[in-house]
Image (cartoon, rainbow, N blue to C red; front, side, top):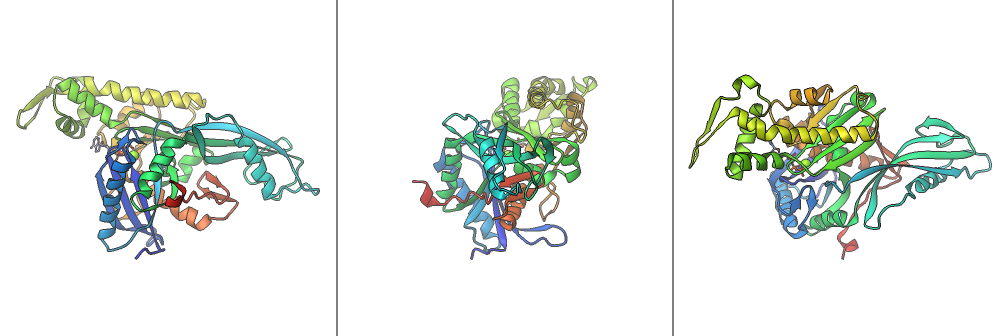
Length: 407
Ligand SMILES: Nc1ncnc2c1ncn2[C@@H]1O[C@H](COP(=O)(O)OP(=O)(O)OP(=O)(O)O)[C@@H](O)[C@H]1O
Ligand SMILES: [Mg+2]
C-alpha cells in the first residue's frame, strides 16, 4: 500500500537512475531509508532525457526494486531535472501598491513577481522556478517579506530558472510512462544544495559543484539565497573517455583506472615514471605521469568553466565558504586539494549525513536533497512562499504532473 508517511525520490542521472523511499518523520535527528535501488541509466545523454521510453523502463524497475525491500508501494515521486539547457536569469519588476491604506497585500506581491517574470524568453523555453531575491519598497531595498508593510511603489528582483520545454516534458513523460506521478521537478543543483550545504555556508557565500557522469552543475549561494545556477555538459565520462583513447584501452578498463588510480591524476612529478599494471585479458601497463597528462587537463577545463560562471556574477574571490564538491566525481581521490589549488578557495566534499543507513556517499546528494525538498513542500503547500533555506518557491507552486495532462 502507498503510505502517506513515506516519501520517494528519483534521481535521473546520466550514469545511473537512483531511487529511495524514506519515512517522512525524522527519527533521532535523521531520516530512515526504507527502500533503495540504483540501476545503470539508459536514454539519458548529458543529463537530458534523449529516449523517454528506454528511460521509463529503468525508472520502473528501479522504483519497483526500492519498493520490494520493505513491501511498500510508491505512486508519486520527487524528481530532478538536469542538463545544460538549464540557466538562471536575474530580472526586476515594479508595481504600484493597490490598497488605499498602502499596506502591501499578497496580491501586490504576486503582481510584482509576475511583472519581473515578463522578460523575453525564446518560445521553446519556460520558467521552471522563481526565487525572489529581495523586495524594494519606495526605494528601500533588502526586504525579504514585504507582506503587510506600507508603501506606494513595490519592486522586486528575482532569479528565474529556465529550461527547454521539450526536455521538461520528456522527463515527465518517462516518469508518467512508468505509472508514477510527478510531485515536482526540482533542478539538480538546487536539490543537491539542500542535502549538503550548511546554513552558515549559504549565508557566507559558497559554490556547490556536483560532478556527475555526464554533467557538472553548480549553484552559488550568498546571504542564504541562491544567486546563480548553471549546468555544464561535461562530467566524469569525459575523463573516462579520454583515458580510454589516451591509453588505447576499453571503456570498462578506463573507468576502473579512473576510479582506482585517481590520485595519479594529481600525483607529483617524482612518481610520474612509476609503472602501474592492471591485469586483465590483456595486461594494461602505463606510467602514472601518462594518466595525469590525459586526465588533468579535462579537470582543469571543468574548473575553468566554473570560474567563468563565478566571474559572470562578479563573485571571484568573494565566496568565503569556498567550494563544496559533490556527485560521484567528488570521489576522485585528490580532487579536493587540486580544486583548492586551482580555484583558490577552501574546498570540502559534501554528502548527505542524516539518512540512515545510507553510507557517506556524495553521489546520493541529489536524491537526499529531493526528499528534503519534498518534505518541506508537502508541509508548506498553500503558503504564500514556501521557503527552503534560501530557495523560496512562489505560491503553492508544486507542479504535480499527472498522466492525463500529457497526451
Ligand atoms: N572513486 C571514484 N573515483 C572517480 N570517479 C568516481 C568514483 N566513484 C564514482 N565515480 C564516478 O561518479 C560517476 C557517477 O556519479 P553520479 O552518480 O553523481 O552521476 P549521475 O548523477 O549518474 O550523472 P549526471 O548527474 O551527470 O547526470 C560515475 O560515472 C563514476 O565515474
Ligand atoms: Mg547527478
